[in-house]
Image (cartoon, rainbow, N blue to C red; front, side, top):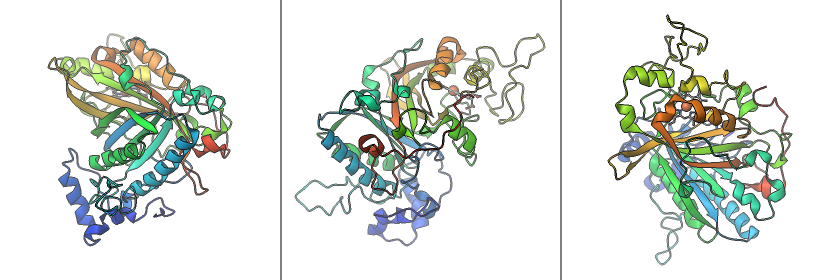
Length: 435
Ligand SMILES: C=CC1=C(C)c2cc3[nH]c(cc4nc(cc5[nH]c(cc1n2)c(C)c5CCC(=O)O)C(CCC(=O)O)=C4C)c(C)c3C=C
Ligand SMILES: [Fe+2]
């Protein structure tokens, strides 16, 4: 197994490709991208930057610069055996570390297991790079009702309330465990989830899953802002990895918050939000911009010139009416209106065919990370669900919340070991969100 360098980058992206030789690896990276038909060009990457370190104080895939593709899965745990569940988490950890390093899920698993048994790696990523694959695990509230975990459930991991307008499909909601796979190559993300689900047979079963084809936010100042399916730049005022103060205050759980096993972890809220594309597409540009509160072209706040100009929520037009409307999305979601609350958004566009009525089943698979969903996501979504002008054009159809444990470190840990072994390492307390 390879180990990442101290800078978080390593070279084992080559090893899955060793079959084909290491010469010209940089050129092959470009070829591999073209072969799977990326819709948007990946940001330039050398072989060295293909691997995101798996180990660390925090799991990768949260403040990691958002990759362009996602495969998200929620599992039900089908066993009653805690030992079997822990054994699977250990196996998953090994496989996840290998795959994020660009290696096969199991050494030589694709063709080395012999002619008479099923391959232990499914093989579709054999000639692909690591593609900045990250795998991030989370545990849902329902898991804590079993396996003797009741006393270890953090208060922050309460089920989300029903919000005005929710039209949730239980078949696309909840789950005992989630795994978020993000990569710059869709086949790499799908391969990772497929192989983890495959070895989980008998212990877990897929409850629901979602593919995302384009990031809808930036999580680093090094990234350009992408556009969502309404055509607007999305992620401009997101928390960025470089803003350490905001990340510590709003994203990472501190040891003193509640359950110590969550120190260095975070909470993930997932919402499958259908976007009523046809209705939006019949809406005048002026109204689209009023609803969002930003200009479609530049992404600038209404009344301003440039994308990153500050929101001026007090500005009034000639008639004395607010330039950014009282029910504009960005006003209602802003930390200025919410007592300092922020979240880290990491969502993806999706299109899952059409719905039988000639409408695209398309939208935003919204993912948010925060230190306490009850204090951050819930008040934000309460405000949006009641008053947001955007509600005429969207419908929340799936929902889930998960506790995302801290990262796996070099201490024999595995995904969830701080929960199952009680090995939490205390973290420095930092200020509460919004204070
Ligand atoms: C509960 C949180 C949020 C949901 C749900 C949500 C859905 C949603 N958002 C857009 C499009 C845009 N959102 C933008 C900004 C923005 N959105 C949220 C939160 C939720 N969005 C926040 C916290 C912010 C930042 C507000 C601020 O401080 O300015 C923007 C503007 C660009 C940006 O800053 O990111 C767009 C565009 C859609 C289409 C959508 C549901 C489908
Ligand atoms: Fe938004």
